[in-house]
Image (cartoon, rainbow, N blue to C red; front, top):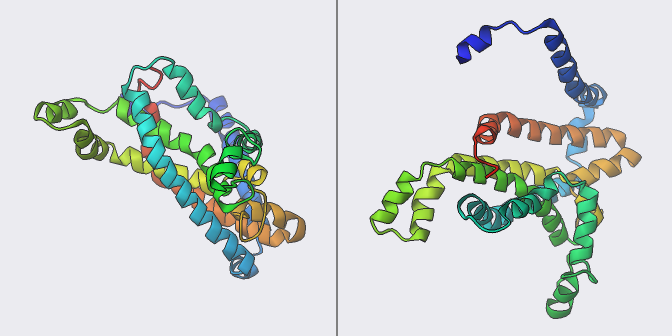
Length: 272
């Protein structure tokens, strides 16, 4: 069936509209490539400010990914395997930050974890923890916007996992924790890896929630996207080079994980 579909000649209007869509996505990248100062690209990338922003981006995005795995995998398991009341509403709440404007997410985080926020006032009063405008605040903002990518990928994999192996393990006396650790997680390892890398890429590119909740302080909260934004005003050439570096990383991630990502999204049963 798939071979017959590939031999079907699409209408000319479909080809034309698809070509326009491809050009629409390709032209911004072409614009960056056109304006890039190739002769001085390495000079811009090796500047102390750029290295500092890159280092902070990598550290914070890795922390955000780790937190997303620690909390997102159990959440995905609950959404996929437990028939709890309000599951649809819980799923929508947990995935809301995927479609929420990042600046709105940053404002929400500020009123939740700020010094006078709903939870932040107690963190400050009881533990002396102040998340806004700190490196920890960057991690929180990135986790908030990136974790849904892990949750939706792992949940789809869990929903479509053949339960017979888990049933066999339980029949042989394996505990639920042992079954999860030695049977379930190894079976969904490709989806877990894909979700983790997508989460990392999303955290690496986060801008709106970060600048709203954590600010833009060099060495403390200024990640690569924020450095690009600041560079557009003071050093456009450096901003273009940093932007291209991020485009290259994100494009490589999407190309490498396309089959894992879309394969999980194509599976049925995610709306249950």
